[in-house]
Length: 179
Image (cartoon, rainbow, N blue to C red):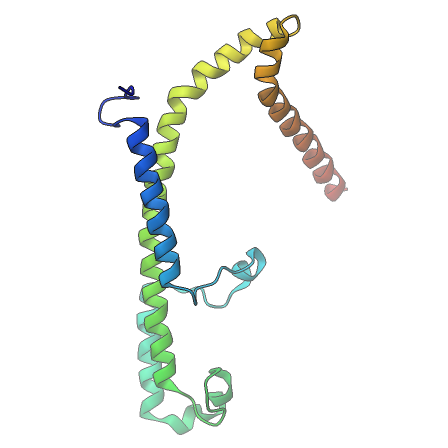
């Protein structure tokens, strides 16, 4: 019988099965929204589409005001990226506000779930990392004379070496930009 990692966690095999099911459901969820595409980091940062749900609801009032006196807003007709360059399409704008709300709520739900998984990973990492690092401190000097131990700890030695090299590079780049 597989060991439990701590009370209530279930077996590792059970967790792997549930993770596989979750991955399949995530793929299904992604397939439900093929029109939703990821922006490049810079495009996301510079997007003029950043608005919250409250702002979206308030902007709906502005769109409703357009319908009261369409002639006042006629010069904006070609800016709505709609179907008719000569008409400000308020129904299209409302549709986009509704879509924004739906995607925002989906994002919020999935971000909340991502936090749960991230915190679960942190909790399990906290049960491993301190003990494994203490063992690493013991193993590192021994590894100089013990090839089998050296081979086993080599990935962590390489990982720390790469991080140290990257840190040096970053510090040098920061110094160069300050000059």
